[in-house]
Length: 158
Image (cartoon, rainbow, N blue to C red; front, side, top):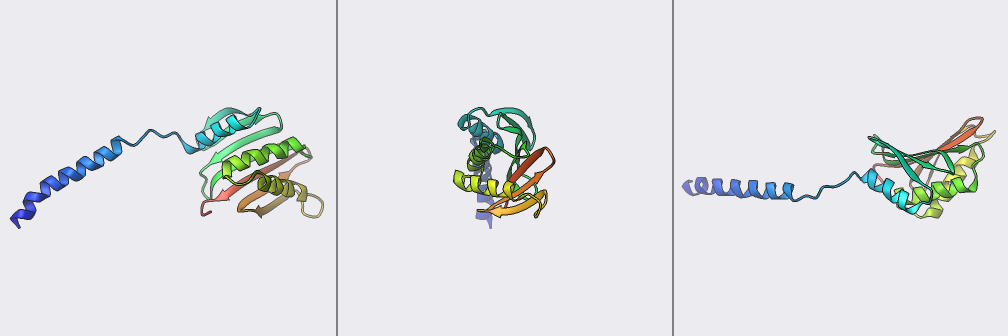
């Protein structure tokens, strides 16, 4: 019993010292969302980071009216929101495909196919709001009389 009480002090001291060393040597890490936004800026021509507000980073690009990157929602890890004219141009689909490929780390062609299918499904039969799933991505497309938008997310459990 006396041996156990004599060793308790040095063991606690060593554990405390190891914990302090682990905490003090961890590198300062920027937010993952900011890293993704910087990577988007570096890899997509014409893309600019405009405003960073907590969980949302607003971006600008000539092919989109609105563009934003959302981070860590209740049911998703990352979110890409893009808005264009009612009939988006091919440059818009290329932008969504490039950004989606970087954000969700899947092939660019998969994001291009899914986003174009989602936007083209809106119409007389399916209405102005379409939700679909393509290659583990959740896509929700909406349109008004003048604009069309797409939200691409991936669930937290995927």
